[in-house]
Length: 183
Image (cartoon, rainbow, N blue to C red; front, side, top):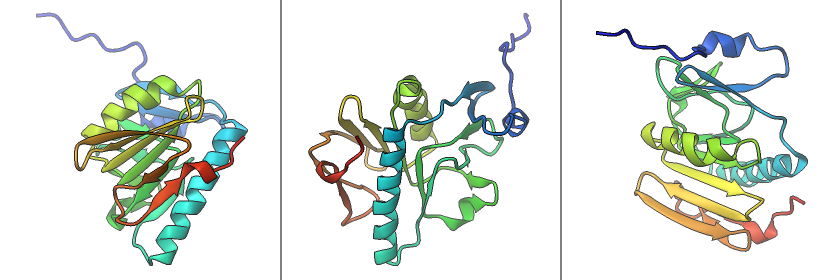
């Protein structure tokens, strides 16, 4: 019987904590994925979504909290999956620690950039689904598309940047993409 071969890059959460100041990365099953500095368009979208969602939560006296990146999300108990979603909405306060979120956020929004395309569309989609994130939005400014995965109800819908997109975790909240200025 042959021994299992370990990946060449067998990183751990300690490697995340030991990165040089200003360097960000995500960790998935021993693989480290370095993160590029976000563009101005990307940051405008993060700011706009954060404002709109935070305003809604405050007006409704909601229990959920919103955290824009950089914000640590530990999807599993053994810290083998460390991600920094662009936007995380967490409704279970027991998941929040000083280090970040321990477990799946309720709603995650990732804004696609050239360097994050494969991660957002593939690796993160799979990880968020299996971790039981309730809802995952992939916002792709280059394609001007929004892909909404409602894992709680096992649905998928696609929208354009001229549509109003309803958030599945809330009964009466939607984002009017036609009104968002990011360019």
